[in-house]
Amino acid sequence: TQLLEQSPQFLSIQEGENLTVYCNSSSVFSSLQWYRQEPGEGPVLLVTVVTGGEVKKLKRLTFQFGDARKDSSLHITAAQPGDTGLYLCAGASTQGGSEKLVFGKGTKLTVNP
Amino acid sequence: GAVVSQHPSWVICKSGTSVKIECRSLDFQATTMFWYRQFPKQSLMLMATSNEGSKATYEQGVEKDKFLINHASLTLSTLTVTSAHPEDSSFYICSAREESARSFPFYEQYFGPGTRLTVT
Image (cartoon, rainbow over all chains, first blue to last red; front, side):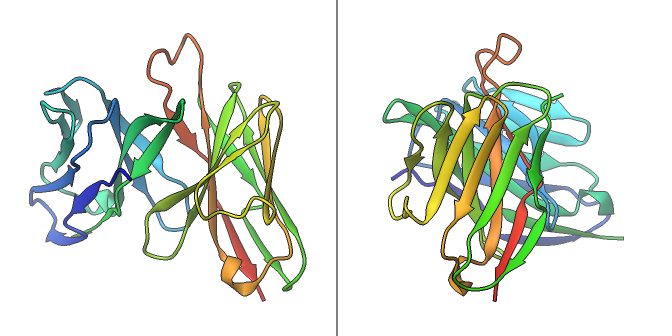
């Protein structure tokens, strides 16, 4: 069974601070996706990383895929209250001929004004 | 683009009744849709993979006779929770995978807004 360990589970910071969320596994994934989920809503895709060592930026968010495609990180610069939410990483792997997503447990981020 | 809708957004039903949840891809065709379940403060757990025109593939531990999935068209999949019990109360989320030239080769999943099921 493939597992994705996400840390920290909870993070409460002040507006303007930087933060990093980690997603680690012993398994190799063909791609890794980061989602953000608001309470009572479905996850919204932020980014997909595919190549080992790949770095993608989305405004103040920087996503990195590990060289071995087993881990990933999300770094937020100068966090704002609007960044508050549940951040989920999900690894894509092919099992039994079909591709599935394996989700981490999520990081609940609270940015205080 | 890549919008997925779910209906209803919330439903309350009595124990022993059945509830149907619809998942639609609004602006793309989805050969494959997925059904997830999410408990409070927990992550998403894949229940089953829904394939258009064929039987769904269920994850280990998910009762296929209780959670009936039908994927009748390239834009619609339904999940029916049969003989619902209070322990079936949860947040059910579907996703649709866009498998097209536009999305090749990374067939990303796009999620619906979820359906909150409460069984009394």
